Image 1 (cartoon, helix red, strand yellow):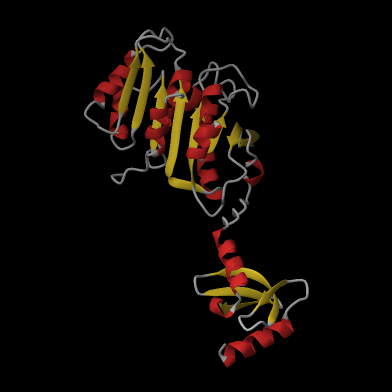
Image 2 (cartoon, rainbow, N blue to C red):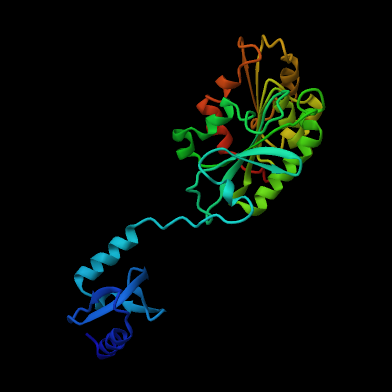
Length: 307
């Protein structure tokens, strides 16, 4: 061992706390210190509250093996903090933004040092005015264990409260404006990939999906509208923001003509898609959100460079 390294270890030995891990130099001398981090050539030890680098080859073979083991361990996830942190529970958590009740789903294992897609999910027409029941089974398809493991994300499910959700303007009215505001607040506080904010909806929520994306094309990366959409006059927006339309030919609640007209206006756009089921009526939403191709398509989308 070089004399300067030997002197370093002797000095470190005199400073080391008794409760720390015992390390052994290559010449047999002992050192008490806490492991901090390591590279391929050196290890950083905490001595008396100070981080001190030590050449890895100056430690015993056993200590070098210990360092290698520590380096192979996954780094602990950085804790999410901020005004929405308490909603990151691994289950649907209920809260309110302005007058807008909403439910939020995200795994408690999300890492604040990373970024995740955000999905805004919009329910259909309803007289419900209670926060929670708006989280339908089709929304939960994104949170299924196998899918969520593949595509971890944050899911926001606002409630189109009354009178807007039952007899009013739906997502084209105040709740829609507040839903957009909620998305912008979530972007400020949670580890969200700003290039992968999606909006999906069913029936009134399908109309809402198209309306919100048309109003805020720079906010959203893609959309999925089931059994409801805006007219062909909005086609220009969806040439920039990819949209997948779904409808059943025998839908007696919302005429399939809506989706056909918009799909016709977008037929030359390779990024947009239209799927029409021959049967299923107005209740195809469960089938749609069990389509693995739809999930793959959606999560692959990022904000178009042409915006």
